[in-house]
Length: 109
Image 1 (cartoon, rainbow, N blue to C red):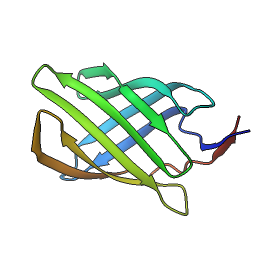
Image 2 (spheres, helix red, strand yellow; image 1 turned 180 degrees about the vertical axis):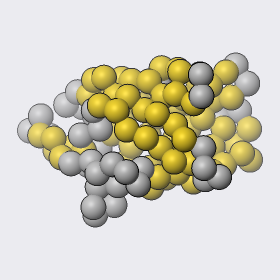
Image 3 (tube, one colour; image 1 turned 120 degrees about the vertical axis):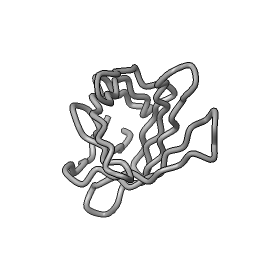
Image 4 (cartoon, rainbow, N blue to C red; image 1 turned 135 degrees about the vertical axis):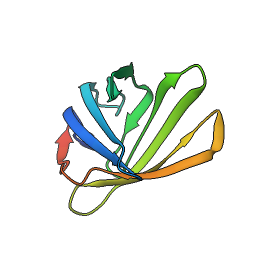
């Protein structure tokens, strides 16, 4: 049995500066690998290199050939995520992010 945070379904990221991103996780397995999409405006991409544990989530959003956002976040005691993102192709571009409207519970596989 593996205890992980359950990130399946739709949820929203609020990025520093007010950018809103819509995430939808379609699948999560017992190893913590996740499949889903992330949307910004009219641009929806499939998340890559995505994994969740009991304490952390990380994934890549390939926004374009010139921008690959890496998102890493930690779950707080209430189940919200707070994290940081940076562009893997330009690591000087960074922003904080959070999921203030969503509480993530546990799932036991």
